[in-house]
Image 1 (cartoon, helix red, strand yellow):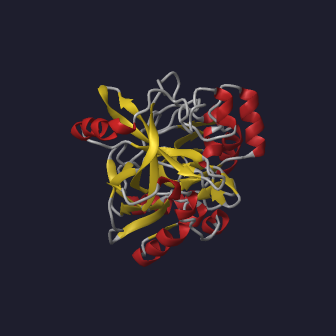
Image 2 (cartoon, rainbow, N blue to C red; image 1 turned 180 degrees about the vertical axis):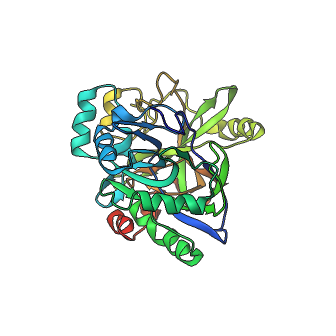
Image 3 (spheres, helix red, strand yellow; image 1 turned 90 degrees about the vertical axis):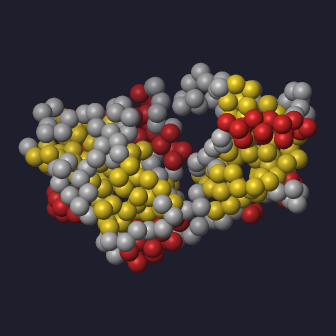
Length: 354
């Protein structure tokens, strides 16, 4: 490739804020794989936010990008897969597979789309030093004739409309809203944008913990919710603590510690086949590699209130939850999926067609 901007490029990032700031460009916050796309004539390359190639995992996108992008360009955007009108992050993770035959099969069954939201280079010109508003104009003009599965992310400078998007887009699986200063140049790997994400709370059962890599203190709490059949399902973790608090938690949870997992609701966690029928901690993962996934079982008698953004397929927390408080007034058996919000709103096709 011979482009004015060459890989690797780390994407520009966003810092979390509580409210939508005024006088900016606003977009939905997509929940997919962030990707920088490089196209030079017949060559196309998709790279991840860490600079690794994603091209082999999304062959259908490589072909679609060749058919929809300008001959020479560099784009920032998101790779997404939809199912039943919502973003499906699980389907994306299934693509990171070593077998080309498996990737090809999934490309046909659950084809991906690319949502473009920034333009870093066009022709022989780098746009990295150009302001956000101008880059947006060039992006929409250069992709005016693009069609599915290549899309331009909806954007607005109307803060009231951004507030409406924040309320309604979650029904399609979006994370929230991103705000970009209008004069902002493209700053790789810098948190120069702003993200406003949804937050809810839930009461969950603390059923175990993993040790921190630094020593015998809590690394993460393992959280559970009871399903309709009364089975405690592993739904995620709570992990952001100071080192002092990690040590305190070991003492606080000592009375609940079990000698072994025998008799624990997740006793079968080490059996690979068990993960096919239940949600248990320690599931084999292409992401975890050889990382130690062992954990210390606790009697599931302690309830914790946590904050979360949204659920993945209604089954588990999409991201690490945030500690709020112990709930000694709650019965662990009352911590069920029924307490969780199920956001409603327009489907993804409606959002992209707006």
